[in-house]
Length: 139
Image 1 (cartoon, one colour):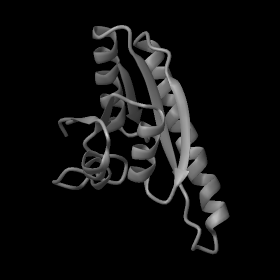
Image 2: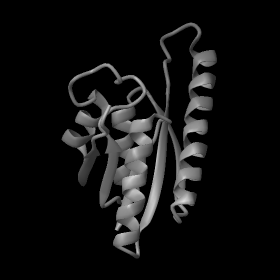
Image 3: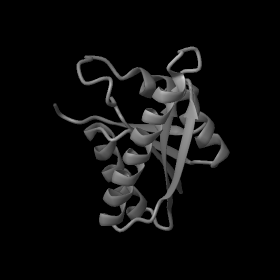
């Protein structure tokens, strides 16, 4: 089984990663791919500066997640994607990587105050070619 785990550095994504690691070990042999999306904002004058900041945040999220996965005994592949929509990029990577399952948090960095499923998770569930496990984290 090939499991894709989108990460953004939030507690929600790290809890999903822990769940994915446990699933991968239980269903060996499994492989894991971590993806972080650096958002691109081409219409802004300050777009290049913001893009560099977003890329640094995405790289830090991947690095942190790699450490969590390693501590759980996994050696994941890492993908840094970039685009206007994190959901679209996650769906695209899942298809390109032939993922069997996407495991993601119910919310991310931007969704801490929402009462509903995060918009990125909702869009991924709707548009993904494969099954999506949305991991809820008590607040």
